[in-house]
Length: 383
Image 1 (cartoon, helix red, strand yellow):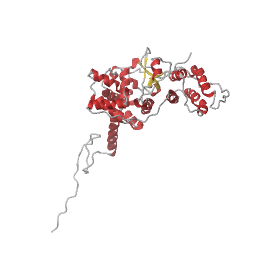
Image 2 (cartoon, one colour):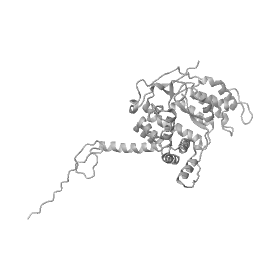
Image 3 (cartoon, helix red, strand yellow):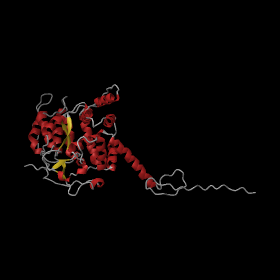
Image 4 (cartoon, helix red, strand yellow):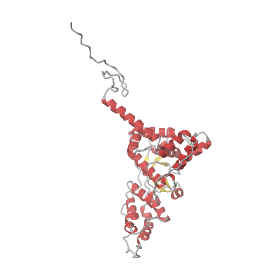
């Protein structure tokens, strides 16, 4: 008598692919996606969600929310790409480092084309339009505009992108991600390595637990960005009913010369004539200041001159100040020997005439701009 052979044929399943939502046939008990392409898309989506979640818990994006609330619109972030967001994060990091992560308030992020003022345009929160400068000079500068920068016409602003005063920062961050595009934000988070660091984590916790509808707590919420990490940790411990414990962060002391020379170098990619200013204040004096223990410094007049040229003034306007700067740093060496006369300062780069150009915007949010929206690089030609 012959024994029957068991049927080893595997059962066929018809699951629904979570990526494309189509049903497919498979004999595998583990297969989830219908094709490798669907699996890749699903993995990409998971990574995007993970990275955008990092953005929502970062102090950087909370700062963007603050700037949008201050300007009253998300459209100050118009025109951003992955590269420009990474560059903007570098500007933000320079301000943090220069202020020793909250130990001082000596430096601020300043607009070249102002957000406020009598102009028919509003300055964008874009690395092209921003510089890190001494707080005192920035406050005195106010809403003046010497030229250059990046702006959007006020007539192009639409109500659906407006941000009300007192709006939830967390909700504003979500709106910012939608405005910029989740893919753009995710890629920027990956490249810039934006993380919910200790300060970011504490800030996020406070934003989640402070009630903005209570006036006293709303006042605390408005001051969070200016508080030191130690103070933030102490506030969190107080709200939790715990005793705060302090800690220190290793920092480097930045001078106005350190910060503004870095900003001259960065802005020179948009305005080539600034390279010559940088050469004067760095290269011409470096051979002499190397002999001194003190670092190269800018006096009040020199700091103001560099501030002004960063904010759009023509380089020729500060020639006399730069000449005095070079004389001050190269006239005498440590051994008392007087330095021979140096070559006069001559700027070769010609300042461009007034230019109005359209800045291309990513496809992901180009449709958000109403017809007639104009982004402008503004160059004010000297008289």
